[in-house]
Image (cartoon, rainbow, N blue to C red; front, side, top):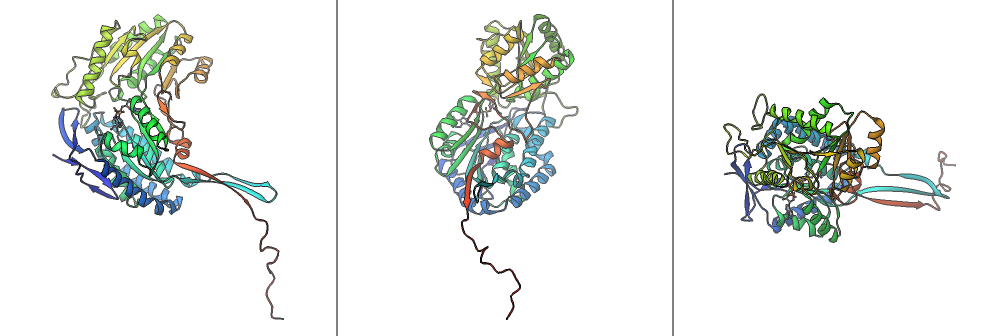
Length: 500
Ligand code: NAD
């Protein structure tokens, strides 16, 4: 059985920690390889490599650093099929979805290619008599990234392309559930000409993470994962003097106004709720219907659309299923327990995915698409993040009630409103207490040149991922105020020297 190790100082390195974990093919339920869980010492070795590489890398001109990113982007394109296949094999999402994830990650690499422009800073001439002022955006040093299982390519690429192009070095700790792709990315960076030690991958769990959070040499920590861990990362790393951005969980509501286009609503909801088996932090898990009539129609149409869905293994299929399995048996069991709790707490189960079996893949970690109606706050399926293919319909009487519901939820990652009325949409965008808002767009994931992040308990720390916030996060500003009281100008001789 293959044992994945680490990537340190430009090389794959076996781990000798003596601890490891299984990695599954979720479609078959089989263990496909194992991943080392690195020791604290091995994590420190990666930090040492990154620290050593920093002084040289920070001095490489931003233009040359950006050229490494251009080559990296070309290599990602050339290897896209191989990477997407591996994502699908370890995560379970279908191939086209894996390719989409990779594309969204590549867009951040494209953004990072513009680093010479992004690092230009500000300049003011004559802030006082003969005094100029300008700012420099300088790299921090060693930065660390800790990522979740659900986007093994995209989420690491929200972080390291910007950090590296800005002149930092990086230690990445990927999810232990699907660890192969970050190692592939490390190899491609080396092939693109990145000097050894600038990007390192340490596989592992809490033992490795705790070193990244507490070692004095790490300057900044980027985290994406569940809220309890995000909060732990934020409090621990910031109490050790690091800057931190820690993105957490979500419960994304979509408001359906009575004037919304019903066909558009159903199509949008199906993809947003069940795409990637609901394992997206921007998945819609709650449909808030304004009025019983809207809800009755929607539930009827969703029931039909779910009946037409195909669920199966994600790789090598033609035509491809709409939805694959969940990442592990443990996670599938957790989702099934949520469905049980919804029934016990009185929600109406319209479509039950609990008994679903994929033919020929009976041992796979599948849960069928599930639909609840008459869901209310106080039920666990409403209050908590399920992170599976379970959509809850909540009925409200008015727009204001819908807004109050969303604002009262502990999470504030994404939300959407479907309406034909510009005034309602505009009011929603302005007032809603959520970080990313869609208007007739169900999954409003900002592009790489904007920033990604939620509000409330979906994000700890002031700066969002990528876009201008990403550049700010991975640089510190130095402002110079300069006066040159005397110079050689007066005494210089500009006429042609002659002998006489
Ligand atoms: P997770 O919190 O279990 O793990 C995330 C990372 O933290 C992994 O690398 C893991 O090894 C590490 N980790 C886990 N427990 C730890 C501990 N006790 N101490 C230190 N490190 C620990 O999350 P997950 O299950 O991999 O991912 C799913 C979660 O991520 C969902 O809650 C989802 O909403 C969230 N997510 C959020 C966003 C966002 O942008 N807000 C994006 C993607 C995923």
